[in-house]
Every structure is written in structure tokens, then in C-alpha cells.
Length: 292
Image (cartoon, rainbow, N blue to C red; front, side):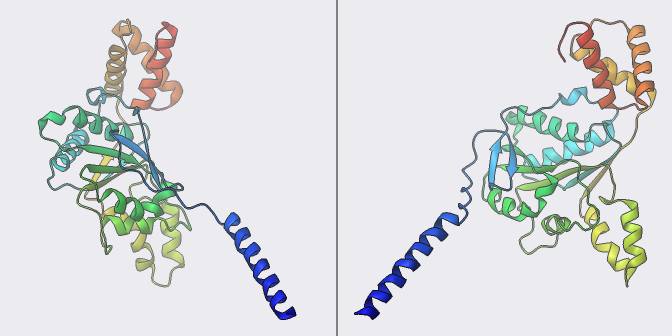
């Protein structure tokens, strides 16, 4: 009898332990919902969901100045992809503020507005650099959809000790699953090889086989079919940017005054770029009691 009571007590204790473990166990991640009608999403890797972006912060494609050559190449590549044809992943690298991320968003918006020209539904998905290790899961998710996707990572680079580049490398080329046919990967970076020079030199000087040690990381940029370089602009191009932005926002200011303000502004900022130009125009708009 005592033996049965003892077993019952043990069973009761085990039941209590099991219930406690259920309470302590983490909640399962929410399942990824079916895509909505939005044209842009942000990938939340922690929750495993695509968050719709109701309004993308972008400028019209025609407003971007000083990058005509790279703009034509990326636009043509994206149009081919949106029509279901062959296209390449793209790395936009170079000077800060020269419109790398603005170009990606502007081209997506331009093609979306021209959907009647035979383009398939084109969806832009933003992924944070810190979430690159979740890329395979994202690819498996959107690879089942009928739409076409541009997965976009802004300000991509890697520092010492980081290994998330391996997930990206596998997706771009060489992995067993690879990249789905309906997905392209666009990234912007200030570094052409996505890693700082001192990191490359350190890998080379401390490795048993220097060439092989660096090759795995440097070869990541080689897996982008398009390398598009963005460089600091000259003064005439900068002035053209300022004039274009001023006209777009309806600022009533004569050329001579605008030129003088633009030259002074660029001198105080120590740079000429599209970002510096739009910052000046916002300041002028504020002085005139307008928004920009």
C-alpha cells in the first residue's frame, strides 16, 4: 500500500514539474502570414515575420542626379528581373550620401508604378545586416510566392569575428538550396570588398595560408553579378542636385542666390553629395515656411 502511495506522490510531483516546464518554455514563433497587398516589407528575424511597410521613404527616380550610368544599369537589370528574365544580384558601393539606397528604392517605386508595362508584381524586402543569418529561412519563405522579390540590405559590411557573411555567401552562390529564381539580392556598402582593409591585412599576416584565409571573405563581393561604384560629385553636379530638389519642392529662389547658398553649405559640410544637397534644400524650405 505504501509503495502505491509513494508512486502516486512521485507521479504527482512529476506532473507538477511538467506543468512548470511548460510555463517556462518559450512561446513558439508566430507563423509567417501570407503576403498582403503591400509592395514593401521589413523582415523581422526574431519574430520570423514580414512586416508590411505602408509608405516607403523614397524620392522619384528623376530626382537623382550625377549617377546616370549606374542608374541605367541597375534599372535595366531590375526591369529584366521584373519581367521574369535573367538578372544579377547587385552591390552598390562607394561614397556616402551619393544615392545608393535611394536608387534601389526609387527604381522599385518606378517599376511598381509602371506595372502595366508587363512587369510582374515586384516586392521590396528590407533585411538588417544583423539578421543575415536568417536569410535561408527568408528565402525558403518567399521562394514559394508567385511575386518577384528584391531583398535589400543597406550599409552592408563585416568586421573582425563576424560569421554572418557565410549565410549570404551561400545564398548568393554555391549553396545546396541557393537563391530562388524569384529573388534578387541588392546591397549597399561604403566598402568595395565589404570588409575593412586592416581586417584583410590582419587575416593575411596571421594565417598559415594567407591567400586562402582572405579568399573566403573577399570572394563574397565577387558573387554579386553587378558592382556599381558611386563616387563624390563635382561642383556643377552638386549645384544641379540642389536646383532639382529646390524645384521639386517648389522653392522660389533665384539661381544666383541658390548657387551662393549651395557653395557655402558644401564648404561648411566639407562634402558634396545628394544627401548634403537635400539637407540644404530642407533648410531653405524651413526658412521659407515650407516643408520638404
